[in-house]
Length: 200
Image: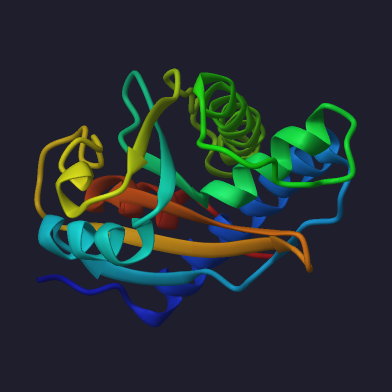
């Protein structure tokens, strides 16, 4: 398996940090709560690694997947626990951020899909500016992950190849909710980002 140089890792982490900051701003506008983002983790992985990570992180969560379209490959996965999704929906409806009792329903799933759509829309705009290439997104796909078998239903590799860059970023509204954003890039797009993004 290939490796990224320390400089490449730093570039991918910085690009992801900037993208995540814009995603966090979009989420802040939806729920009117401050969002804290953690330092991204960058590593080279294969498809088996990704499946193991999704299985470890994803039990009891909803995963919303948005991939890129046209001539830029990559995938983005938002993972949030049931209670956090309920809290977000309550906040978006003007509530205090209380998780209602009961199971998740279609309204909850539509809510978290729209959250991901807004977060990735903001991220795609700034990524376009950073790498000087148009980056657009497909509509969100939502998967409720309750068993390891549910991970198989997540379209986490909508592009060919078995070596890619994985970026994992945790975010939270302190004391209220948490989530994980996972970004997956094939090596050719990783190389493109590293070659076209200039650090200050």
